[in-house]
Every structure is written in structure tokens, then in C-alpha cells.
Length: 245
Image 1: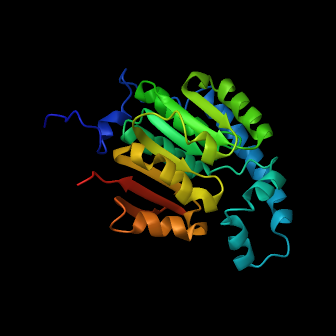
Image 2: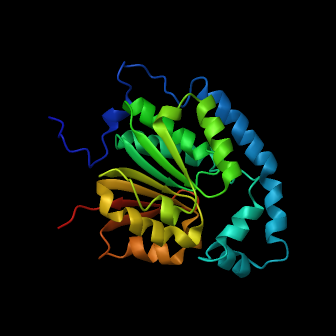
């Protein structure tokens, strides 16, 4: 069957590299070795999260994580913690970006850049593109940029320092193929609102820890909102932008 020009559907042929090789940027040096080290460091640092939630009930923790006002103080206390996606989620991000042939990606919540590396590797293997990330903690921006440079992917990535409600409100591509939401959970609805009009039909939105943002889940699961959405993997909500009627 002849392949359509519109890329607003999953095209598994995109997974094959242009040179026909089964090797990918994700699974070869320098990215593979760098990710192995970063995941090991993230696992070792995960114990640092405990003091931030010490003495809190599950309800209190959920309220803090979903807050629209307390996120700066909370994430400031965790500025030295990677807050990384899992290796499985990272690989899923790579696969989704490859499957839709993503060329324009927006990421809310860069942290140390582990998820960014997976998405940028997909851009490289898709033939190029641009990833715009947002991170308000300066020390994390510096570490993420260093990691991305070590992976040889800097030309594909722009990390904007500051509050995403400001940094992602300007200079965006006309069409966005994939969005990762993995920053302050309470801001998921507002960040999506900034990007919504630029999402092409078939664009994917991956929201990590989406259960901590009930308002966001209500938005993307509403039949009238223009999305098809489903819980996917561990604490992920995977949504697809539907064509406008």
C-alpha cells in the first residue's frame, strides 16, 4: 500500500534507520554508556527524596505534588536529585518519537536530561529536528546541557531556563509532534494549554505521574477536548491529539 504523505499516524517503518542498520543512537556509544551511568546515579540518589516527604500522609504528599503554588520550593529542595524517568519509560519515549517520525518535540521538566537524551536520540535517528526543553532550576540546566553535550546531541536540543509558563509561551514550532510532561504536576493543564494549538493531528502527549494531576486527566479524557487518552505503563497517561472536525 502506498504510504501517505501525512505523518499523523504511527508509521513503524520510521523505526528503521535510513542506512538500513539495526543500530540506533540510543543503543550505541556514546549515548548508551552515558545513560547507563546516569541511571545508576539516579538510583543511588533516589534516597534523597525521602526527607522531602518525611512525616507526610499519602494525601498530603499528593496535594503537595499537585500544587500550582508550592512547586518552586518543593523542586528547589530537590535540585540535586535527578528525578529521572525509568529506563523503561525512557525507551518508550524513544520508540514513540521514532514511531511518529517526530521532528519537533517539547519537554516540560528537563531535570538532568535523561529523558531528553532518549528523545534527542530519536530525533537524530529520525533524520534531525528540534527538542525544546524547560527547566527552572539553573544547576539542573547546567548538568543537563553537559550530559547532552557528552552525548553529542547538543545541536538538536534547546533548554530554556525559567518558569515553563513563560519559556514555553513563545517561539515554538508551528507544529509539534510529541510532548513530554514531567515537571510540576499541578502545571500540566496550563502547559498543555500553551502548546495545544500547535499540536498536529496525531501528536502524542506523554504525561509522567499524571495521577498527581486530576485536572489534567479530566481534560485529556474528556470526549469534547479533542484527545484520545489512555493510562499506559506505570503512572503514564498517553494521549493523542485528534484532528479538528
